[in-house]
Amino acid sequence: MTMPTATPSTTLAQELALITSVLDLMTQEQQLLVSADTAGLDELTPRKAQVVVAMTALAQQRHACLAAAGFAADDGGMQAWVEGSGAADALAGWQALLDKTREAKELNRINGMLITRQLSHTQGLINAMRTPAGGGDAAVYGKSGQAAPGGPSKRYVVG
Image 1 (cartoon, rainbow, N blue to C red):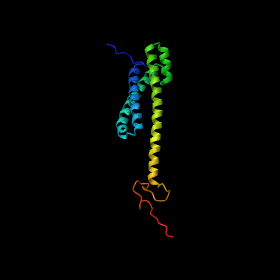
Image 2: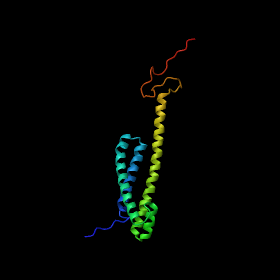
Image 3: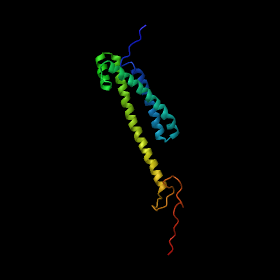
Image 4: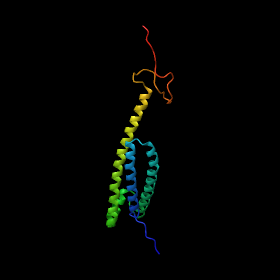
């Protein structure tokens, strides 16, 4: 019994399933970012990382098959291989993977903007706690995160 030979398209169905999982996780991540649910993010992030590791391993297998077939071990090599293979299912699978990857990149860009916004908001809150509204020299919290000595100033002017 002969085992089928791996081709560059062998992993496409698995890669497509994984990128679809990543998109689902990134959509959940976006909802957690909007609601500032850090506990949910803490739970989701390792799951997303595991799927990305699996995707990377499959992409490396595809690249190795491409190199063995005499093509560049990258997206351009895959495009050349699917166009030259004449396999309609390989071309359709590759296009679907590219489409989902573009979708994931856009979702990642949006999630990155949400993270930046949340970090900026958090930094603003930290700064507000360090510097009183009156702009005096007494802060509520010092740089170490501990309450500032003496707390807000209570100076009285006698005149």
